[in-house]
Structure formats: C-alpha cells, structure tokens
Length: 583
Image 1 (cartoon, one colour):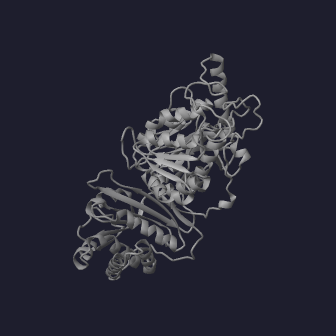
Image 2: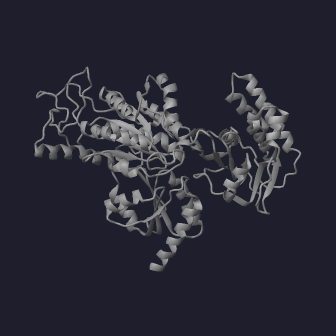
Image 3: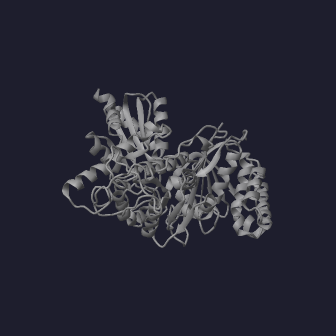
C-alpha cells in the first residue's frame, strides 16, 4: 500500500487563481506531517493567463527529483486534464471539478468528481476559495489532518482574520463534501513525528547563502526566474546591514556591483539569460581589473526572450566563454536547494580569494523548486575575505597588480592606504596603461594563474566539493552530470544498480575551470559515458571533449521541463548493452 510515498500534480488555468498555492500548501502540510518533499512548477509567461502546474513528490526518505508520472492528479478545469493526462499513471487517482467530465480516463484509475466551483462560487459566494475546497477534499480523501491546513492558513494570512475565516470555511466545506465519497484508492498519509527540516526554494537558499557569506550590496533588475531574489533582498538585506538596489537595467546592476566591490563591499547580482548578455562587457572588465563579484544566472529556455517560465541549461557557453579577449572567470552550478545555499557561500569565497567574477548557473526548475533540507550549521561555515592592502612592506610604492605566485595581489580600498586606477586597459603592476607585448603576456598569465588557485580551493577548504564521484571506480556506464539534472541521474543510477547494471556517476559543481584530470580519469574508467543536459547542442559535453580530448555520449532535451528518471534510466540501459557487447 503506497502510504506516505506518492506524487501529486495540480493543474489549472491561472485565471482561476490558486493553482500554485494549492501545491505549496500541500507541500508544507506534508512536511509538517514529518515527510520529505520535492516540488516542481511551470506556469505561463502571458498576463492573459494559461495553464499552470505544480508537482509535489513526498516520501519518508530523501527524494532527489520531482517524480515522473502523477499518482494523484488534481484538475481545476477540463483543459488541465487534456494537458496532463499523458503524465498521469494508468492506475492513479484523478480528482476533478465535477463541472466537466474527463474523457479517456484509464479504466484502472480511480476518479473523484467533486463540485469545487459550485461550492466556492454558489454555496460560499467566494470564487477565490476554490483551492481551499480542494485542499479540504484532499484532507478527507487521503488522511492528512485538517488541522495541518488550518495552521497553514492561520499563519499565511496572519493579521487578516476575515480572510483566515473565509478560507477555513472553504476548507471545511471541501472536507465535508469529500467525506460523502467512498474511498477506492490505496494512497494514504500517516503523519510521522516532525523532522528537523527547513523548507526553502532554490532562490531563497541563494539569498540566505549570500547573506551568510557577507554580501553587503545587491543590485538587480526584475527578470524571470530571478525576480524573487531581488524582492527578497529589497525586503531583508537591510536587516543584515546591507544595501539593496533596484536599478534601471542589467548593465546598471553589474556596474553597481563592481563599484561596490571596488569600494570594499561583497556584492552580487542575479539575472537570467537576456540580462546576463547585457552584463558581458562588465564581466570582462571585472576580470581585467581583478574586481571580485558574484553573478547568478537562473537559466531559462532561450534564445532571446525564449520561454521565460521554462527551464533549460543552455547558457553554459555564455558563462564559460562570453566576453571579448581571454576572460578568466569561475563558473559553479548547484544541483539542490541545499546546494544553492552552500554554492553561493563558496562563490563569494572564490570571488574574494581569486579576485575574479564568479558565475552561478542555476535554472528555472531549481530556482522555484522547494525541498525539505537539513538545517544549516552557520558555525561550520568558513568565510573568506579578500587580501586587502594595509600599507605594510611597500617601500617601492603600492603595486595593485603586483606579480605573485598565485596571481592574486592585495587590493587597496578607497580611503585607505594605496591608490590605483582600476583600468579596463591593459596595465602594468602599478595599474598604469601599458601595451607592451611582453607586459600583456605577463599580465594575462597572472590573471589565469588564479584559475589554478580556484581548483585548489577545496583542498584548503574541504567543505566544498567541486565534483563528486558516485559508485565504483570502474563501470560499464558512467554518467557525467551538472546542475539540476543531477537529482534525476542520482535516482536513475540507483535504480540501475538495483537491476544489476554496472554504473557510476560524476557530478560536477565546478564547471570552469574544469577538473580536467578527474574527468579524464572518470571517462577512461568507464565502458561508455553518458552526459545528459537540458540544451540542444550538448554544451558541457563539448567543453568536456575540448578539455580532455575524450568523447562522451550527449543526451539532450529542450522541452522546457526537467529530465524524468526513467529517461535517464533507459539511456543507461542502452549504453550498458553496448558496453557489454563491446567487451
């Protein structure tokens, strides 16, 4: 019997309101019942509305992906059934508004038609309460205590008693209506003791990570799917002694970040592909002038405006290669909500340590995903600050770009000892423009030595792992993965092992500079190597081939939604057969 282990999908038109909130309340309620949760959502980009969806997966053990098909599908309207019917398990549970009759439901499915619209619009005269009647019905059908939803309603609308009361009334009405039905399905919730967990989205975790790292200036411009980072920072950063800025465009945002960092403050911006394109010239300047900064790019489907509310991993070329001339930079990619926090902390550490721009590549799925995560031990964090010039040991004068073994030179802060010009022009050690060919070669080598320092970061600070090798040292199939695709790969390799397949995985968090020798060793140790990513051109696969001289099998999707576990598993099975045949 599937107790405390199932996947719920909620779909409907945004004009009805409350589709995403229904899923969010379900996720939080299940977490309050002591369960782990993992969500994924997608929604229209148009103001006129359209179909939105949120999927909630829950279990008593950690889950790493949003799940494949829906065990329980909740449809606000007929169109949502047509949109999601192919993602519905043949033996699942369909809950629909009885204002329509779904067509083509598998005979093995359980169907509950409940008059949600009638209850909300006619009986309660509150059309906006339809989602609360749905939650009440869910509570009655699957055993989730109504008191959990009541607590969520009271805390969410605290201070607005009339809204609290109207939603509680709708919740009760939905509960009583569903109690009239005969339960025919096997799914059930059995509350467990509350776990010591946090519920965060990827964007929230990035904000907390930035604050924990000491971010004092955030500058940004609204853009999906990073706008809620700007909103969070505008509300909360001043509490931590920081300054948030909403500026007129992304060029102004990165300019403000570099100005703040030049003045000595840790600074960050967040954007998506189109905004990141506008920042490219300033990123080149940051590398040349050796100014630390952190740039988050939550990738969405492109090119151009593309599909603003869909997910993709197609900005890797831009992150690694974007810029004129040879531009050193560091590129990191979190894969979990917990990872969003820690990768952001390490991004600031690397920016300060190496005096380089550090780019975090997130994506829409990870940005808006919520997960239950382990509590964060702030006392265990190692926070790095830049090497500041104090005026000591400079008998021959301050040299901002002094040649050093690591490539990093102490940075003077305006108002303190030392003065220099942060030139975008090529310069000598003092910072004065210099176009001598030997000087240009020397300074380029200096800037790129900092990438070697970046690769040694985890040796000095082992809390960060630029890569993780899962599974045996040698296997028939290896999977290299980055970003939010890692969760589906982790589950797929686990299932493959249960089938007796020989498989290992290499999860990369540091994308550039690449841990070249580790990747080479992994590829050479495997019979076949799969590299799945959400882009059309196999961008990380190209980077791996170019850096290692070895081949991998690209597996690419550009549908705007994440990989399913079964898709990765099928690809592993195919390569395993090839590897066995080639022995």
